[in-house]
Image 1 (cartoon, rainbow, N blue to C red):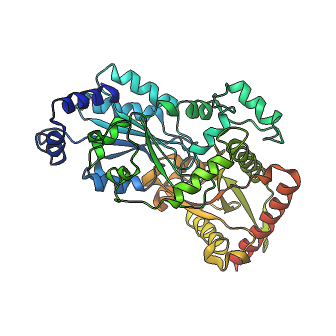
Image 2: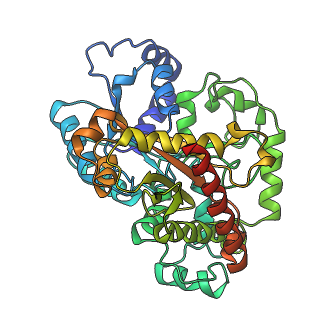
Amino acid sequence: MGEGEILDLVDAVKARGLFEELRKRTCRGKGMETMPAGRVLVPSTKHYSWVKAMDILGLGQDKLVQIKVDSSFRMDMADLRKCLERCLRDEIPALAVVAVIGSTEEGAIDPLHEMAELRREFAKKGLSFHLHADCAFGGYARSLFLEPGGAFMNYAGLKKALFERGIFSSRQDWPSRSVYEAFKAIPEADSITIDPHKLGYVPYAAGAAVFKDKRALDLISYFAAYVFEETEDNPMLLGSYIMKGSKAGSAAAAVWMAHKVVSLDIDGYGGIIGRSVEGARRFYNALLSARAFSIDGRDFQVMPICEPDLNMVDFCFYPKGSLDLEEINALNLAVYERCSWKGGPLYAGDFITSKTSLDFSEYGDTPMVLLSSLGIPEAGGRRVGSLYVLRSCVLTPYLARDESFEAYWSGFLSAMGRALTKARA
């Protein structure tokens, strides 16, 4: 049974005047004592807010099932299938499956199109689920795939348009077919979340949750929307659906104005984001071919952890020939301390970076693939348990220009050379 069919049943309950009584009973857990607790399935790249959400819902963190990710940090479809098969076999409800469209740490795009296909497959077997797309970071990048007027471009047409419209100034093999199909499949999600304060370039705490079927709002309201006329436009209803009873309007006004000024298509937001994608890919390729830094007679190399799906590039430094993961982690922590807000006034630094830790407990075997490429034994990697990496979110559209990127890269090399020298001191 799909979500639309479930909401049809809710409509039938409303028609009989029983909705509020049913909602009160289910919110208190009455009649559900013998039912197995449902699961929420997320990739290991999920945002930490999902852990908080499970506590708020009263389901508990142990009901949040982490699906493995592949070497590109996208959800592993084979592992998702295995988990759904277990739910089907053990008659455990799969409440929701979450696709991340632009993971916070790596910018990875989960294969939403494959997840939608899995739902159709399992629905025939008697298991369906709410499909949510966490587009908080990457959602605005969908504008890059849209013609003025809103038509979604075909794959060949998009790759051609990127050059003809001057968005890519150099030959870049982007997007991959998987990334393209994932963005195309966003309308198949039952709900999405999106944050204009990220790739929307709106510097306010703005964010939105969007449902495909508006009737779903009744299930989370504390002042039921259906008691009003369907045509009634009452902004005061917002407090019925959110954790807070009210919200300031300035952020919404800023988003509205931004969308009026910059169109949500390839000629507007798409062009800006597309140029930032090229800048990130130039940075990634430069990291791949970068020469070693020679500091006090010892060589240090830099390694990007994966090819970027969007404009997020993660990388780490390591002493050439070192098999000591603790030494590598300490080196990258020292670089971060000197190239972040912690290093002093922001305006005093040439290069500002953030960081993250790829824990084996969260990412499974994926970090081991990276460590193996450095020759680090598996036993040593698992003993330490995590890989500390630096994170660069390339938001500027100006690195697509040769002269701008050359200046940027030169500045990066100088800043990292100084940071490594100080780290060795």
